[in-house]
Image 1 (cartoon, rainbow, N blue to C red):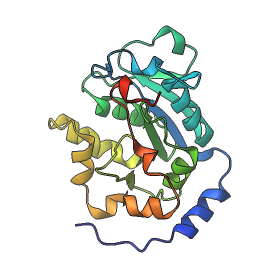
Image 2 (cartoon, one colour):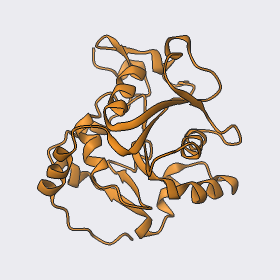
Image 3 (cartoon, rainbow, N blue to C red):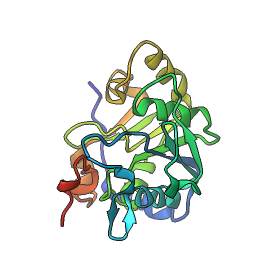
Image 4 (tube, rainbow, N blue to C red):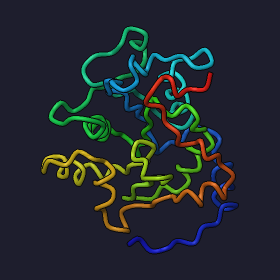
Length: 213
């Protein structure tokens, strides 16, 4: 079990406010290669308040990262062809394929990833997450469960995650769970709620009908 870490929300928020421009040591990757089977249509194209879910997420990552790109499975939908893009590592399936592809081309110390289906996650919450980055350590929030698609991955994690995938692993949550305590920082829900963030930050939408009217 991971040892308890003393949490100081005011100090964390101060670190977050001190950084108002993109982080020079962080790149952003929008993991968007899913097929949206449960959603019923291409989730990336779903419009909310006049913007697609893809655009909403990409803009948030771009506000934080020195470089931002989308990770697609095998083709780029026409509306997104002007965005920087790479493709999943075809050797693997699921989000882990996109993460490995992004880590392979990473030119910075850290990679911040985000999916398209978390429209409530705020730039402030992502800055909060970034304030905990540490060499060699995965920083992942926990709500009702780990959320490995709203996570900071250090460049050093490429080897371990590739070995995990080569051994047949595909769940990012399982990968993080089996890391040693000194390889991860889990931000518990009570920590980020105490810092003033909404419970909705990590609410994802797998069904279009679930969106507020």
